[in-house]
Image (cartoon, rainbow, N blue to C red; front, side, top):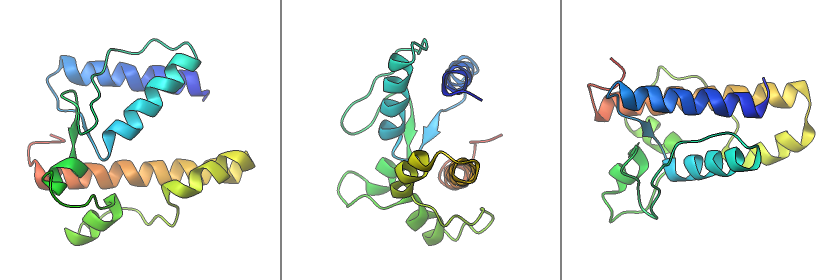
Length: 138
């Protein structure tokens, strides 16, 4: 699926969650949201207005910020899923730092690895969100 089409699906799901009153949850969400907003602008994809601030957003629950309590260093998603012993998550040997190199390879294998990494991040984030906010995901 083309990037523009994926962004349109993402923003549609974003709006649907808001309309249904479901919380939008992320981990280091400002990074992901700012990236999605910039890519949407570049690709001329309509995106909703999202309020981003240096430390948080009223539009999304950021688990990384919650777990730092505003006073401790930020830890990774991998760190927290291990700390909370969230074991029902897929193995992932790729980190965010690997993504640019995989995109540059632009092979079916590289894109499969990126897809698997993104899937693992979503599963981890959801598991952590359910642990911190038991009503999430129902």
